[in-house]
Length: 338
Image 1 (cartoon, rainbow, N blue to C red):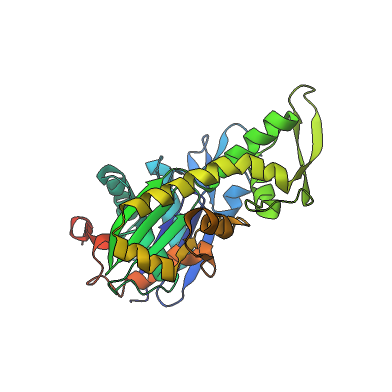
Image 2: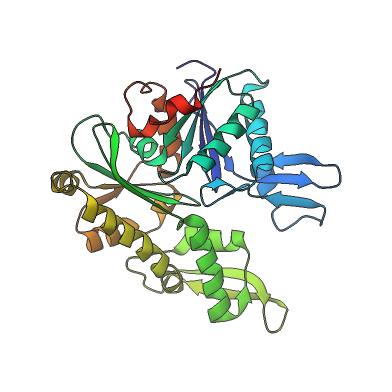
């Protein structure tokens, strides 16, 4: 792996970049702040994230990725360019591996590749998230035995069974961290008639959520606007509330895990019963999720070490496997540019 090789986990919530042998050099929110008057990018990442919901009308803080794919090409390209400048100091022409959800279409693939090429890449490779997640979790996927990963990111959840360097069965659904936040906002609005912001919902999710055995004793104070009075309001939300708000969304993911199992060859199912299901991504950190999946699916389930960075670590490792990986690089020749 060359010193200028760059791996990018272009997530809906966070962009994580690895470079050469330095490991992870950027882990920041996928947000761009744009000045419509001057028509220029003001900030990306952490600085732009601080501006969400706090800017005048002519400055917009946007998330250019939605549900795991690019929704705004111009802003995505600007974001990638700024981050590459940040890690390299100057724009050379690096090789870049980009990570995409397993069910991404050719059109969506092309948008990701064009963004990387416009950002100055010499060569662009595509790897699918489940392959990268298992590599990053330290699972040996080269053996003819089944490994299952559930990667719950910001925009998509990817579920896949991998064996012998390839994806046997996979499923990608647009139910993940951002939809969890939306469910919390909706739940608080309906129960307490208080409208809260995205950041408040996300913070409550991280602090007190328990989707397996909530007691109702863990509480957090959230602040927002009362919809009837129109005035500021503070309320207490419990882990039992959070369970009620999120359980339908979580069950949707578990139902898809069950579907993938139903389509998986029985020999590989037997392997997974032994090795267990690996949870990666930010959503894997929901308290009680491994226990809930184990209870409903009947297979052991564990959270990978540092699950948020799993995919990025796998993308970094992928430079050593370009000749061996099958499904993860099946369209590699299509996107090889000089």
